[in-house]
Image (tube, rainbow, N blue to C red; front, side, top):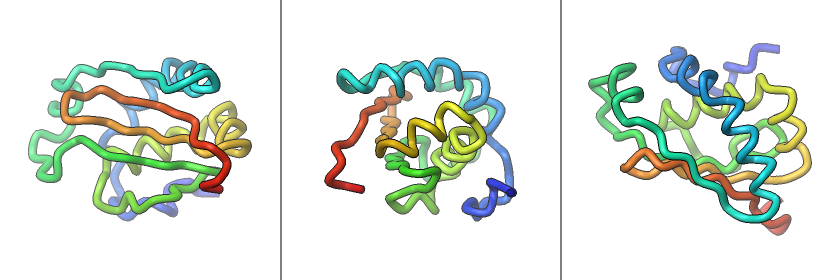
Length: 120
């Protein structure tokens, strides 16, 4: 199955960056069982991949069973994160059991939390 089917951007702009941090993101997803987790990225890593990004790099992604629960069509950053998560066996298992929320703020802090079952 081509996991890029949900992405309308057709590029892999941030996939290499998300893959680089995938082990840390997976650890945070597991740790989110006890509460929200945070990871601080380096802004220059995102800016160097797409210096002309007009919409900014911040986003909110809610993912469950390998799909975005919310609309991420305007965020290539979020689409590429979802792609990397879907291609990870461990992340797919975690998202199969629960909904996770990934929020990147303007300071490149990524917050990962497990959302309660009422959203499912």
